[in-house]
Amino acid sequence: MERFLITGGMGFLGSHLSERLLREGKEVWALDLFEPPYARRLREHPRFHMVVDTIMNRGTLEKLVDRCDAVCHLAAIACPDQYVHQTRKTMDIGLRAGFEVIDLVRLTGKFLFFTSTSEIYGRNPDVPWHEDADRVLGSAEVDRWCYSTSKAALEHYIRACQLDEQLDYVTVRVFNAYGPRLRGRVLDKFVDDALEGRPLTVHGDGSQTRCFTYVDDLIEAFVRLIETPSAHNTVYNVGSSVETSILDLAHTISALAGRSPSFEFLKHADVMGESYEDIQRRVPDVSKIERAVGWKATTPLELGLGEMIAYRTEELGLAHA
Ligand SMILES: NC(=O)c1ccc[n+]([C@@H]2O[C@H](COP(=O)([O-])OP(=O)(O)OC[C@H]3O[C@@H](n4cnc5c(N)ncnc54)[C@H](O)[C@@H]3O)[C@@H](O)[C@H]2O)c1
Image 1 (cartoon, rainbow, N blue to C red):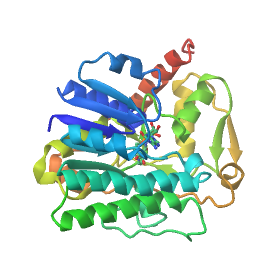
Image 2 (cartoon, rainbow, N blue to C red; image 1 turned 135 degrees about the horizontal axis):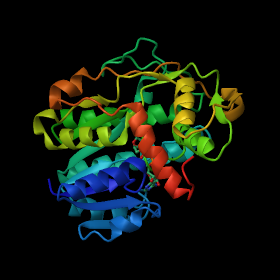
Image 3 (cartoon, rainbow, N blue to C red; image 1 turned 135 degrees about the vertical axis):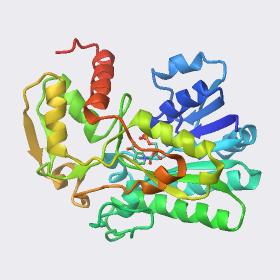
């Protein structure tokens, strides 16, 4: 595969995937709603094409899918504080447009790479989660599940198309990615607070854990899966196996930014609304991807955070403390 369309190609993961595919010698079309400042450098690349439009525009999608061998479908409303407050938009983009993308890929015989999420498993307490672990979700009256449900519906549809022998695909369930350019998640909020000398805002008591996965490790997994036909037509957890509590994360970021720790604790409901439920632990079983393409996350948290802090320090025009 030589020509790739990346929907959401200027987002956090999309921009890193674009860069990596260009380094591999591929031609890349990035479809996104906006062109961020960091895209300027990419624009100068002769094999990179930026298309500013919405995936809801069928005409644009048709033209772009036609030009490519593979479609990496990343566009989504993916930040928790957006998907709990903008449920209809989350589902319009996540579901309606998602089905359109999949159908276009299916009908044109292209390859599909789809980014699903660890949110799929909901609040299943039996970690680590293997890919066939149960989805344990709350009521459909609770808005936070609209993101998980949209991704799960697309996973079902993708699998159904493949069972009908109409689609070649890989689906990945991403676990808490971080790195330069991340926006709207707990980790970049901590980094900004620490760099700008504010107390770090911890939701809940900070005992909840996540497996933070450095962006370079993730992109390596994506590329290996795409390039290994024997690994196609199934779903993989992609994440670090190292669990870190939110409070430990806050301490580590404060130390790396050269600040003495100072925290403000807020109730989840006060920040995310009454409908939000947090998940205490979210841990992947990554034995499947390890067997398929020999991948494991290798970047230590301190190293990845150091890269992120250095990037943000420069972006904000700050001198490192
Ligand atoms: N970052 C993570 O930790 C994580 C975890 C699980 C799953 N994922 C999935 O990975 C993918 C990428 O996530 P990310 O962290 O890069 O998020 P992101 O928000 O940085 O990127 C998503 C991109 O999609 C674009 N987009 C939204 N609506 C669009 C539309 N109508 N038309 C075109 N583009 C549109 C946004 O502008 C944004 O640039 C998403 O599908 C997300 O659900 C990410």
